[in-house]
Length: 445
Image 1 (cartoon, rainbow, N blue to C red):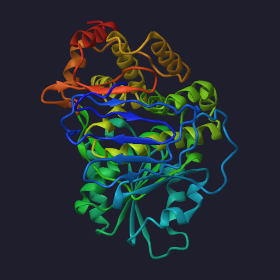
Image 2 (image 1 turned 45 degrees about the vertical axis):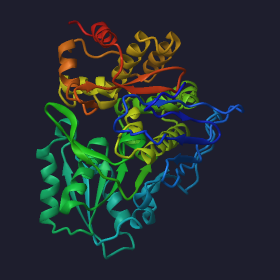
Image 3 (image 1 turned 120 degrees about the horizontal axis):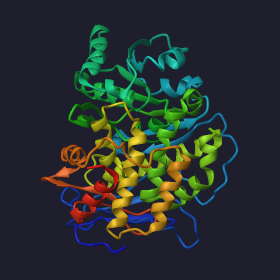
Image 4 (image 1 turned 135 degrees about the horizontal axis):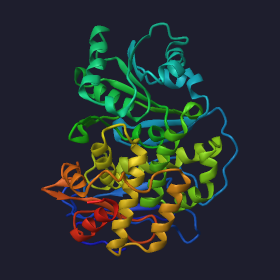
């Protein structure tokens, strides 16, 4: 795909290099083109990523990548965790991935710098893992005291009223600036705990312990934190990075089937926007993922985190490139807001939103029909919805999408697929009729 003026172009081979022209400004770009190409050998190696910009030093993104073209699922991992590094200079941090990591107390303890810890969790997760986390934080470490706050479970509680319960507990416990907040739960807990950590005393350390697929492959990585507003999802928040992310894959054993499927929507997303070989791996291994095969899930989590770590390291504050991680989210957030938070899980809404984004991409002539079919097929196999609820209207979609975070100067920018599988654009320049036609195809009025 050609690179036009004022546009990014990423080309991926056995070594990935991104060049930004001297006049490139991601905050001003109308287009963002992301192109990933495998090398001639058919191997995809993301082990080193170099960002070159005039007047700045290059940065390496060390994501402990493996070759995606190896379609087999390997042997069970050893006790040592897989580590994916998010390279953000002095705010870099590791993502630990593996089985039984909550029993390795030294992993958590080395990221706790003060003497007081506040574990933020919910009514569903607390009975399952709170005691284990407290033990991991305090075993052989008597100088650390641990408090906890247990919030109600559900997207509908991701609001200011619930957030204040975290602040109340922190203040009552007389936590200081050297304290550490620990998010134990899914994406809602991670987002709220992170936002509380970013705000309390103007910023304290925090750790992510995600317990859902959605959180493990996406929301716990990258520092997006926040709460919902009745008029729009995630409109209030901050970019605030954790000290580490600890992904104990054993926590998926207690995850309901619906939650597990919801998280797979984000896994599928990575393949569509930037990693075609990963998407092909998913097509071959979806039944293993649905059956909770531990090796398949370990690989899916690892590969997803590698993809997100690379993007976040290049564009932490979502000035351009990082926005591509939101494929299907503009439509999906409208579904969540229109229905009422919690009626559909986030991944369910993103799945339907992805189908709508793909449909619009096809109407624009940017992808061929085979991609449309492959997206629909894999979502059906993952037991995810492929259309929004019939109760939502075109006007509702347009109203909610008008306040989406990706609106700039009144222009709604969307992430759409363009070109071969694994390529996408982030743009506000598209035929408005294609958007109207997509909404009309999926809505009654």
